[in-house]
Image (tube, rainbow, N blue to C red):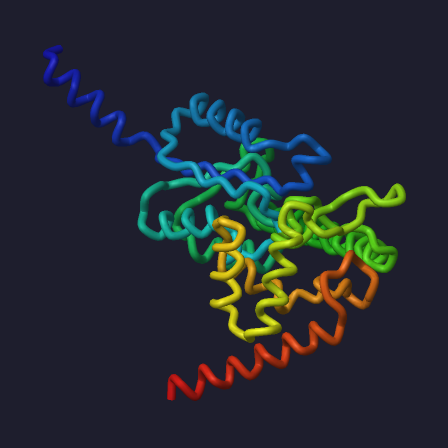
Length: 281
């Protein structure tokens, strides 16, 4: 056989290899409680593709994303759906159905969007060519959705109790510019962030005095010689935690100002919105 013919046969065989996209997802809670990781899923999908002669042409990874999130709120899934519609692959691989969805309605909506692309759960077996297989998938998704709803209800009750007793709902990295989490009296509480509390107080006082967000922003960034995000600081003005209030608890966290000052800020913001509308007209 000549080199030309050998290359042609090899090239033809490669073209016939099924192109697959690999979708992996893990929520922050799953990583924390069960040790499920993107790396573990990635290894399993690579192994499956190699074993079955599949060509991986794309990886789509949603890290820290719950399976209950809507399609529109899952960035990697959104990209994969667009690429499926563009015909960039023939099959989608994921390790288990719950990596893909935990909602019946969302699952069927997604199936419409990716058609005619098919999918395979590498760690589970489904025969979607039969009525029983399709019914089984629907049943599994229904059960998963029920479990997720029940878990959500339990989490809601726990969070309500935490807020009522002044406990922090999330970690220090989720508290924004003004706050952090510290242990106070043996309990995790939301307190003023030490490294920014003076800046925040200056920002609030400047806004109350001069009633201009842009000026307040420039003032504190120049005074403290720091780079801050304009919108991040701006959001503080409507954050009820700056007067200690959160979800019905007036003593949820350490306050910067009192309720009267907070109400004054809201009045100023409303006036500024009206002024801006008039200027545009």
